Image 1 (tube, rainbow, N blue to C red):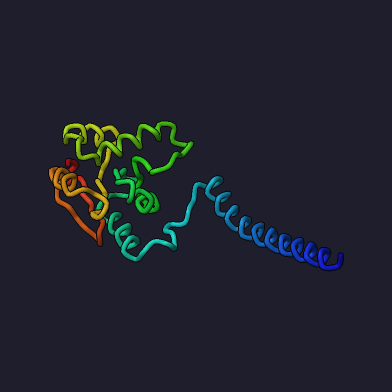
Image 2 (spheres, rainbow, N blue to C red; image 1 turned 90 degrees about the horizontal axis):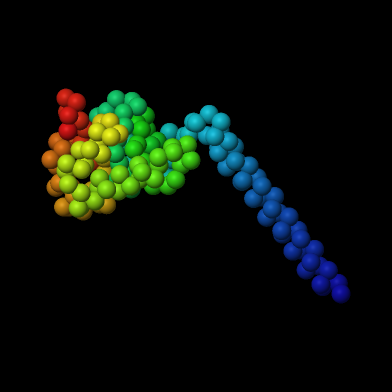
Length: 169
């Protein structure tokens, strides 16, 4: 019937338009991914981050030298990764870091309320950490009090930073 053929033609056209759009958007995303995979370069900051997060990320770079390793709570790892600083772990697997599972476990342990400060010191030494980073809203008050033993806290928005002072925590 003519109506059935018209509906079929319309559906085919709609699918073709949808496919074309997805190919166009996918190509844009693929280009960004390909650039990262071939050069290791990523955009400095993501457009979805708030001004507070961007300001805190920039502030972090004033507290530790470029390339310094920071241990960042899982809710702060990605903004820190986008700076000139390195993070012990990010909250997803990354194939180019063979010991990522151990790094994630160490990071989780570091911010766990049942971890002693002696164990935290071992983790800091293992990765030559230069700064501790966390967001106040995501960290238990008890853990924040425990971390105060590592030195003075600096803040930008709801992000907190405890850098090494004179090479020591």
